[in-house]
Structure formats: structure tokens, C-alpha cells
View (cartoon, one colour):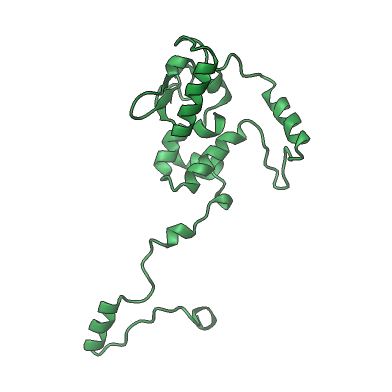
Length: 187
């Protein structure tokens, strides 16, 4: 729930079943304004996979009423429980780059996953409910984990297209090379 929504601990803790719209064309959840850090209620889209899990959870909980909380309680000691679970699985709580794997780090995971999926920065900012796109991009997104090579596929080739080379030759011009061979050693 943390990773697939990017919600903060308090926001997850205060969710009620009425906060969810699981049956519409665009399933979503809404954190009530009084529970949101930015004090704005805005629907957030939900992944179909999470929607199915939430439907199953609703059934498992005995079809609770709309004002009942989604989770009876999110423990204050969640960080300590997470630390204990990490130790049991030999996963470091703090890595060699001084990054912490705590509950809030899951928001960073969400932002990084959005970047990896190619979501534009303004949409990611809105989904994360940050005041500025720079916050999402520079603080919450680990760009070392984002593969940039797909972005290169959309770039035009270095050399002139065949039609342009033909036109250049017809005008007595030498066409540009489509190779960068020797570029670094001569320039």
C-alpha cells in the first residue's frame, strides 16, 4: 500500500473504506484534506492489481462499513518492526551510501518507480502531492536506478537522413557523416 500509493504513514492510517472508489472506470483513493500534509483532498489513481487486493481485503474484513478504517491501526513502532524484519533477512537498514530503508523511504521508492516508468515530472509531482516538481525529482527520485537509455531511442540519428544526403550531393556538398568515429580523439 505504501509503495503503490506513495502515501505517508498518517495518511494510510486515516483511510476509511469511503476513501476508496474501487468500482469506477478510474479506481482511486482520496485522502481527506484534514489528513493530507498539503491540506488538499485529491483523488489518486490506483493500480488495478492493488484494487483487486483491496476488494479481497474488504471481503476478508467482513465487508466493513464506509466510515470504518481500512487498517485498524498502523503501529507507531512500525519503523522498529521494519528494522527487526530487515535484520532477520540480512538487509541493511542503512546502506553504504547512508540511505535509510524506513517507512518514509517507501515514498522515495514510489517516486523512483514513477521515473522508471517514464512518468513526466509534473505528473509525478502531482501524484506525490509535492509543492514543487524539483522536490519529487531531486529529493525523492533515485536517478541512479532509472535507465536513461530508452530516452535515447527517441533522438534523431547523428547523420543526415538519406534524402538529405542525396540533396547535399546534388548541390555539390559533402554529406555529414553518420558516425562519431574519431570524434573524441580529434576534438
